[in-house]
Image 1 (cartoon, rainbow, N blue to C red):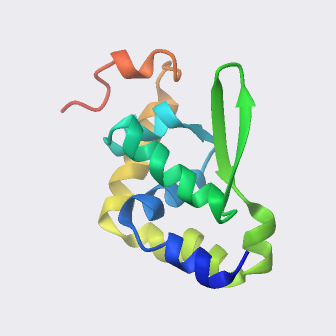
Image 2 (cartoon, rainbow, N blue to C red):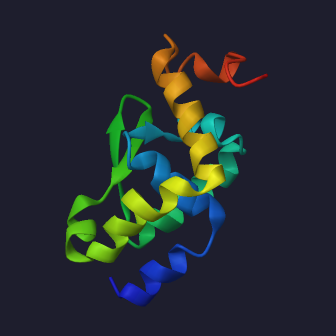
Length: 122
Protein backbone atom coordinates (compact mmCIF):
# COMPACT_ATOMS: atom_id res chain seq x y z
CA UNK A 1 0.00 0.00 0.00
CA UNK A 2 1.28 3.43 -0.92
CA UNK A 3 1.92 5.57 2.14
CA UNK A 4 0.11 8.48 0.47
CA UNK A 5 -3.08 6.40 0.44
CA UNK A 6 -2.65 5.61 4.13
CA UNK A 7 -2.18 9.29 4.90
CA UNK A 8 -5.31 10.19 2.92
CA UNK A 9 -7.25 7.66 5.01
CA UNK A 10 -6.23 9.58 8.14
CA UNK A 11 -7.88 12.74 6.84
CA UNK A 12 -11.16 12.22 8.70
CA UNK A 13 -11.88 12.69 12.39
CA UNK A 14 -13.92 9.49 12.72
CA UNK A 15 -11.16 7.35 11.23
CA UNK A 16 -8.68 8.75 13.72
CA UNK A 17 -11.18 8.10 16.52
CA UNK A 18 -11.56 4.49 15.36
CA UNK A 19 -7.79 3.98 15.35
CA UNK A 20 -7.61 5.47 18.84
CA UNK A 21 -10.21 3.00 20.13
CA UNK A 22 -8.67 0.02 18.34
CA UNK A 23 -5.31 0.85 19.91
CA UNK A 24 -6.80 -0.39 23.17
CA UNK A 25 -8.86 -3.36 22.10
CA UNK A 26 -10.49 -5.32 19.33
CA UNK A 27 -14.02 -4.02 18.65
CA UNK A 28 -16.94 -4.75 16.37
CA UNK A 29 -19.00 -2.22 14.40
CA UNK A 30 -21.83 -2.07 16.94
CA UNK A 31 -19.37 -1.37 19.76
CA UNK A 32 -17.66 1.37 17.76
CA UNK A 33 -20.91 3.03 16.71
CA UNK A 34 -22.20 3.08 20.30
CA UNK A 35 -18.94 4.24 21.87
CA UNK A 36 -18.39 6.93 19.22
CA UNK A 37 -22.11 7.76 19.13
CA UNK A 38 -22.33 7.58 15.32
CA UNK A 39 -24.61 5.60 13.03
CA UNK A 40 -23.81 2.06 11.93
CA UNK A 41 -23.44 3.18 8.31
CA UNK A 42 -21.03 5.96 9.34
CA UNK A 43 -18.86 3.57 11.36
CA UNK A 44 -18.94 0.94 8.61
CA UNK A 45 -17.96 3.43 5.91
CA UNK A 46 -14.91 4.57 7.87
CA UNK A 47 -13.93 1.03 8.82
CA UNK A 48 -14.08 0.10 5.14
CA UNK A 49 -11.69 2.92 4.23
CA UNK A 50 -9.25 1.98 7.00
CA UNK A 51 -9.36 -1.67 5.95
CA UNK A 52 -8.86 -0.71 2.29
CA UNK A 53 -5.47 0.85 3.15
CA UNK A 54 -4.55 -2.00 5.56
CA UNK A 55 -4.55 0.14 8.72
CA UNK A 56 -6.94 -2.35 10.31
CA UNK A 57 -7.78 -6.03 10.05
CA UNK A 58 -11.10 -7.78 10.48
CA UNK A 59 -11.74 -11.15 12.09
CA UNK A 60 -15.15 -12.81 11.80
CA UNK A 61 -16.66 -14.34 14.95
CA UNK A 62 -20.24 -15.61 14.60
CA UNK A 63 -22.14 -12.85 12.77
CA UNK A 64 -19.80 -10.08 13.92
CA UNK A 65 -16.52 -8.85 12.49
CA UNK A 66 -14.04 -7.68 15.10
CA UNK A 67 -11.52 -5.08 14.02
CA UNK A 68 -8.00 -4.48 15.28
CA UNK A 69 -5.00 -2.43 14.24
CA UNK A 70 -2.70 -3.94 11.62
CA UNK A 71 0.43 -4.24 13.72
CA UNK A 72 2.52 -5.21 10.67
CA UNK A 73 1.77 -1.87 8.99
CA UNK A 74 2.46 0.01 12.22
CA UNK A 75 5.82 -1.77 12.57
CA UNK A 76 6.67 -0.83 8.99
CA UNK A 77 5.75 2.84 9.51
CA UNK A 78 6.82 3.83 13.02
CA UNK A 79 5.36 7.34 12.72
CA UNK A 80 1.87 5.81 12.40
CA UNK A 81 2.38 3.83 15.58
CA UNK A 82 3.57 6.98 17.35
CA UNK A 83 0.61 8.95 16.01
CA UNK A 84 -1.90 6.37 17.23
CA UNK A 85 -0.29 5.53 20.56
CA UNK A 86 1.05 8.94 21.59
CA UNK A 87 -0.25 11.92 19.63
CA UNK A 88 -3.97 11.12 19.50
CA UNK A 89 -4.38 10.31 23.20
CA UNK A 90 -4.29 13.98 24.26
CA UNK A 91 -7.05 15.02 21.85
CA UNK A 92 -10.24 15.81 23.81
CA UNK A 93 -12.54 13.76 21.53
CA UNK A 94 -10.21 10.78 21.84
CA UNK A 95 -10.22 11.11 25.63
CA UNK A 96 -14.03 11.08 25.67
CA UNK A 97 -14.10 8.00 23.43
CA UNK A 98 -11.62 6.22 25.71
CA UNK A 99 -13.74 7.03 28.77
CA UNK A 100 -16.81 5.52 27.07
CA UNK A 101 -14.74 2.47 26.09
CA UNK A 102 -13.58 2.04 29.70
CA UNK A 103 -17.19 2.37 30.92
CA UNK A 104 -18.30 -0.26 28.40
CA UNK A 105 -15.43 -2.62 29.27
CA UNK A 106 -16.27 -2.31 32.99
CA UNK A 107 -19.92 -3.17 32.32
CA UNK A 108 -21.42 -6.60 31.84
CA UNK A 109 -22.67 -5.57 28.41
CA UNK A 110 -21.70 -7.29 25.16
CA UNK A 111 -22.10 -6.21 21.57
CA UNK A 112 -25.43 -8.09 21.62
CA UNK A 113 -26.80 -6.09 24.57
CA UNK A 114 -25.02 -2.75 24.10
CA UNK A 115 -27.42 -1.26 21.48
CA UNK A 116 -30.41 -1.68 23.82
CA UNK A 117 -28.64 -0.22 26.85
CA UNK A 118 -28.47 3.39 27.96
CA UNK A 119 -24.94 3.13 29.31
CA UNK A 120 -23.72 6.32 27.62
CA UNK A 121 -26.69 8.52 28.41
CA UNK A 122 -25.91 11.09 31.07
